[in-house]
Length: 531
Image (cartoon, rainbow, N blue to C red; front, side, top):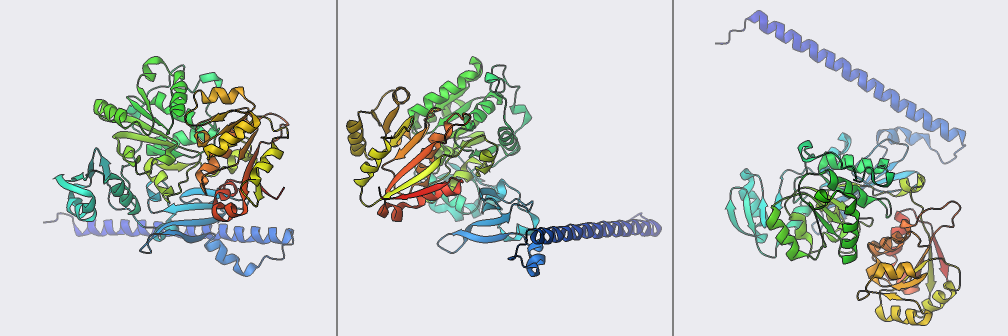
C-alpha cells in the first residue's frame, strides 16, 4: 500500500507544475533570443547589401535564408538508389559545421556527410532527420566478426555470404578471402569495422625529454594540437593536412606518449620505411624499441608481430589512401586500441574514397585554404600545357628546360619515355630499380623520375615539377606530385614554385578530372595551348 498521503501527492504535483512552468518560461525566453538574433542577421544582411549597392539582392527571400541557410544535395548513391553521401553548402558567414569540410571557396564551405559520419562528427539537430542512424556496433578482429550477442542471428543472416560458421554468441568466423567483401559491405551499411573510443588516460605517459615536444625547439602548432585533441577525443583519427605540414611529427608525438607497443605501417615503399625509422630516432632508445615499422606489403612480418603482441596500443597508417585496397584492407582489422591515418591525398580511383575515412577515423584537415592564409604553405602555380600529339609534349619539355627552373623533377610513368628523356638531356632516371634515390635527387639539379617519386620524397629545395606522362585521371597522383613542392622551405621574396602538366587535347577530355584536384585545393590553374 502506498504510504504517501494525499497532501504529499498534491504538493509533489504542485512542484512539478511549477517546474514545467519555469521550463516553459525558459523555452519562451530562448525562442525570443533566437528570433532577436535572426532579426539582427536580417538587418545586417540588408544593411550590407544597401551599403555596397548590391542590385542583385532580393529581400523577399531573406526570411527563408535565415530559416535554412544551407543547401543539401545527394552526392553519391548505390545501385539500389540509396543515398550514401551528401554535400552541404554553407555560406562562411553562417557559424555552422556538419560532417567533414571537403573544400572551401572565398565565400562558402562545402561539407561532406556520409552514412558513417555521425560516428566521428556531430550532426546539428535540425539535420538529424536527414541522415540515417547507425544502430549496430560491429568489429572485425583476427578473422572474426564480432556483434552484440543479442544481434548474432540478425548479423549472421545479413552477412552470411561472407561467413563460415558461428563460433559462439556474437562471434562469427569469416570465410577465408572474404574480409575485403565483408568490410566493404559493413561500410556501405553505415557501420564501422572497429569501435572508436576516447583515449584512456592510463594509456598515456609524459612526453620524453628528447621527444617531439622539445625536438629542435619546434613546438606543436595550433593545427597539430587540434589533431591531437581530436585523437584524444575519438581514439581514431585520419589527418589529411597538406604535404609538408608535419603530419608525421604528430604521429611521432603520439607514439612517444602512448604506453605499449606501436605499429607504424609506413606506406608502400622501403624509402618511406627508412624515413620513419629516422623520424623515430628523436625518441629515447627504450621507447623507440616499442615502435615496429613495416610497409603495407609486409604481411608475414605483420602476422608475426600480431602473434607476438596480440594487440597494439596504436597503429599508424601512413599514406592511408592505400588502406581500402583489396590486398591491404585486412590491415584495418589488426587488433589495436587506437588508430591514426595520415595522407595529403585522400583520393582513390576505385570509388572508395570514403573508406579511407571510415577505416582510419575522424577526418581532420580536408581544406587547405587555412594553411595558405596563415602562410604555413604556399601553393605552387599550376600550368597546363595542351598540345595536339603526344610527341609534341617533348617540344614543350625542351622549351621549358631552356629556362632557369631551379631544382626540377620530371615525372614519367612510362619507363621508355623516362629513359629517352634521361639520355637526351644527360640527367639521371630514377625508377623502381634505382638505389640511393634521394641521394641521386639531392646531387642533381634535374632528374627524371617514375611513379616511385609520387610518395614519400621530401625535397626542401625543389622549385619545379614537370609531368610528361601520368596515370590517367588519378586525382591522388596529381595531388601527390604537386605535393612534392609543398615541402619547399619558404623564403622571403622567393618566386613561387611551378607545377607544369603536359597533356594532349585527348588526354584533357579523358583525364581532365586529375586537374580538378588542383581546383579543389585552391591552386590557380593557367591553361596554355600550343607552342
